[in-house]
Amino acid sequence: MTSDPALASWLQLSLTPGLGAATLRALLKQFGLPENVIAARRGELARLVPRETLAALDSAPVGREVERALAWAARAGHAVVTLADTAYPRLLLEIPDPPALLYCRGRTELMSRPALAVVGSRNATAQGVSNAEQFARAFSAAGLTIVSGLALGIDAAAHRGGLAGEGSTVAVLGTGVDLAYPAANAPLAEEIAARGLLVSELPLGTKAFGHHFPRRNRLISGLAQGCLVIEAALASGSLITARTAAEQGREVFAVPGSIHSPLAKGCHALIKSGAKLAESADDVLSELAAFRRTGFASTRAPSAPAGPGSEDPLLACMGYDPVDVDSLCARAGLPAERVAAELLRLELAGSVAALPGGLYQRLSKG
Image (tube, rainbow, N blue to C red; front, side):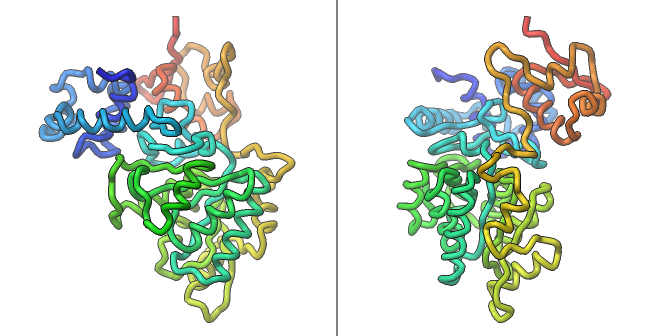
């Protein structure tokens, strides 16, 4: 019997074949926390879950994978962070499809610090690699955590620059967090696990498949307040990250290059479409002025979680009567997307209940 039944329930749902992210969110909305989903009558679940998926939910293979993940998470430096955890990065709650859980190796607190995504070509030039490392080093020295995807070329250089400063670095993987891909970056991955953070939404042991990486890119941009592209061809996956960043409301920057270089064309296309031109690290830092050494507090992130004995700021605005999102926005002085993200966190924590008609009500802990 597991020593962490709450985490086991999250893992059981996320590791069930055929139970996709959308269905999982629908189950959480209907039944609350995963423990309630697992305890629900299978006839009730059948309204949302296909029969074959329900059969897999209680299967021995899923049980073995849950125990494997729990054993992995119990090791020093490892963690599985769920939507209900205070360590879950709040910026990810702002994206349309936040992962239910994240497998982490290293410093999980880095996911909640001011960050900049730095991405670019795997087949980078020597100058591009140098630019990426020097830019990232300057950002990290200014207190920004560097987020990238552990690919060859620009990504690897950005991680090295991040590790050189106090901001450090987060590598978002397109494989299970227990695998190093590409193999050439295995030593870098170990260094990041020791001094930064490796993170993946994919189950342990998941190998590299092409369709994983565009999905991974939404997390790279989602964890950061902005995205800088250094060298990218017109068909580069880095442009997917930049487009996702723009859709998520993040700032997008691009480093220009020679008009004769194929690796500059993607950056030039971004600049033409509205990305900010970055010739130096200061060009980016001047736009993200809140993250200079004189003040790192994110202008996008909500206030810090309430400490022991204090009250959550949004709960304080709610009172105990049913209230709609617009009223909460007015009371808290926050935009609707921020309030919606906080309400999801509070609902999963059992502090708030969703009512018919788009209303929410605070639940008494007494």
